[in-house]
Structures are given as C-alpha cells and as structure tokens.
Picture (cartoon, rainbow, N blue to C red):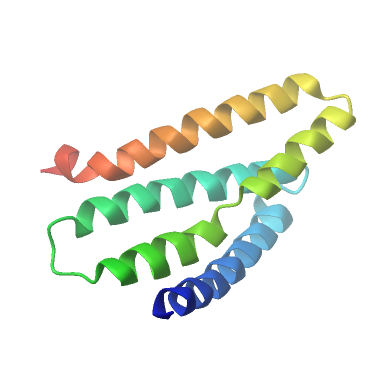
Length: 126
C-alpha cells in the first residue's frame, strides 16, 4: 500500500513539473512549435531516469523510494507518451506528415539514446 502512495505523491510532483516546464517552453522557448517542448521534456526525463538508476545502483538507497516515488511517480508523470501521441496525430491531421515523421523518429531515437547516456554517464566521466 505504501508503494501506491509513493507513486501518487511522485505523480503529483511530476505532473506539476510537466505542466510548469511545458507552459514555460511553449510560451517562451518554442511558441510556434509546441511539440518541441514535449520532445525536450521527454528527452530530459529519459536521461534522468537512466542517470538516477545508474547513480543508485549498489548504493544504500531505498529501492521503493527510487522505483516508485522518483522513477514511476515523478519521472513517469513528467514524461508523457500520451502528449507525444496526440501531438503526432495533430501534426498528421494538419497535413504535416513529414514533420510528424521527424518528430516521431527523433522522439524514439533521442529518448532511448538519452536513457542510455544517463545509465552510462558515470562511466564516461570517470
């Protein structure tokens, strides 16, 4: 039952961060290309998931706190596949299929690459 509350509390924080970052990027950084804010947020979250896993492996941290509160709760709600999906569909409906294709491919490639980077960054720095 505690894991449920860890996910819920983390989810509230992650969703609030997602909303705040998204609003900031859409308003000030990418005002004409709203989908780029989602791409950036998902890349950042993917990196953080990998990095947090890498720095906590073998350390004396609570697995439940890391897994349920931070990774599933905070970062799971910070990164959103549903927002990515609707934005890709909106681009296709707006007859911007090429841009949608770029968005879809770059999201998958960059998010997976940044998760890998996060998992291995300590190896690169040491």
